[in-house]
Length: 447
Image: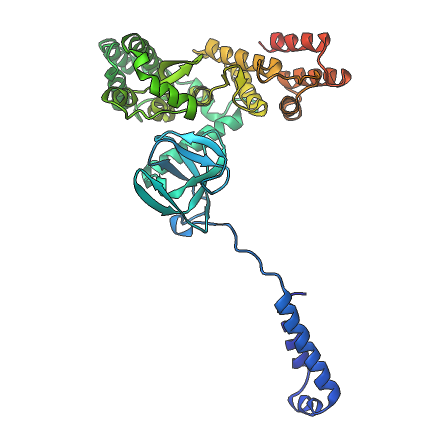
């Protein structure tokens, strides 16, 4: 019983005595002894009751009117770190670009931390957030800002659409939206006008990308159907590819070695370092590393902000998965940079997309992604092998295979991994000629 319960007990006890009767009994030794004992016991129990610690986090009530509202944040600076715990010593989970978007998870610390950044002191709490890769962690509140209401609402709609597509990737059949889009016709007058405009742009100028994006907004946004927007995006992407290729040929990448060092160390870089890097960023081009060498690549995050909501469900599904692949390197120096369990999720998404959309315009690209990721999932890499030194299956790969088998037992990929796990169990989870042959068979069957 708690102190509160003892007090209530005494009140109830006292209420059962009439005032006069209570007065008479109080003159006796027995009642005085009983009353004194109960009071002493109550005081002792109150004094010894353990104090509950204050909660470490609390809801930021002043910032939200409804806990169910989805709120999004954006860093006010580059290189902001998402940490596993709300303190400066917490494990770094991700280093963000300035244009990154975070979802606020309605929790913040009840304490504040003072930090120095760029010769300025900030005192603020920590927010619990979720990144684009669904990684949950803590971000310093003094260096982020909530998006304006209108922008927040549009982003919430985009995220919900993307999540609905992901859910659809785990179910069968076409959605109502896909059925409707299948009956649409491309509005050729709009499309041909846009293609003609793109053809007149100079592919050697990075500003052509921004011009093409602006023309898409003017000609197509909320003015036509999704199938027409898909065709317009394909035309834009062809221009985007040519511009990036021309930029690679014209720029001396060796002079940007500090950017390569930043990418290696942080996974991102500050695109505001010079007029040229700012121009690249403003036109959907970013620095990237390919096989350890600095190069230029498409900034899909930048481009998809314009096209995503206008395109079809199938195109958005492709965009979502491609964007996830591009934002997180799969392998670096022969080491797997994501967990095998996360890789299994990517394989499932590409496998579903390829099986469902054989007529998709970039079907071969989608299948190429599936082949690369499935091969790594079943064979591992040189520095992230699937079997340890004793030739026993590594626990993290076993977890990934079980995830596919348990959640998708009736699919072709689920059946393939069930058969593989069964064989591994028979082999006491050791590698053998039979398991090697089974791995080859999985790739052949699914591709």
